[in-house]
Length: 213
Image (tube, rainbow, N blue to C red; front, side, top):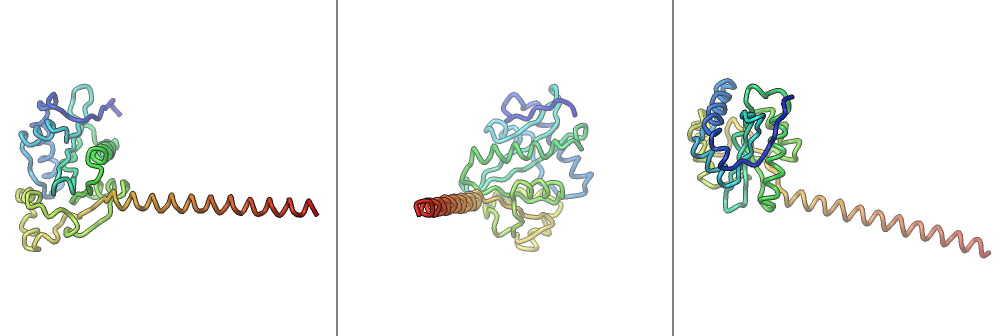
């Protein structure tokens, strides 16, 4: 695998915006799936705001993903995950997704992370990160998000189902549920440890009493 660096994109990466959009569009055509189109200007805006992740290999574009914020930071979504054809089948998509996921959790710690996709590979990556399949009703109701689907070839299906379902699968990661689960696990671990200590003390006390006798 070629040496690849994954970083938070900035204005220095504006020169890659056009190529990123072209690779995203070409990939969608090959898969025969719908995709919400994005302009180079939109991608550059994400880079400017520190909400884009880019992978480069000696100055060559290798991969990309960006973060969208919805509902006053109640939700965030990772979109436009793409790997250049020259760098596919090397696990780079997973690395970019994990980088984006961890970065968004730090930048938006209270936001629910969601995504909609038709790609089985992306679903697998999301599942490994802790996402759960959900109905569209559990995702953001921000009309601007769903307006982004208008350029997708499957938009008619979405509207005919009143935005309740489409060919995409909705997936959600709720950090609050994850935090509570960890707290429950931590409480159980402490309780178990205390019980073990108490049991040990009782057993030692029995030994002392027997010795005195």
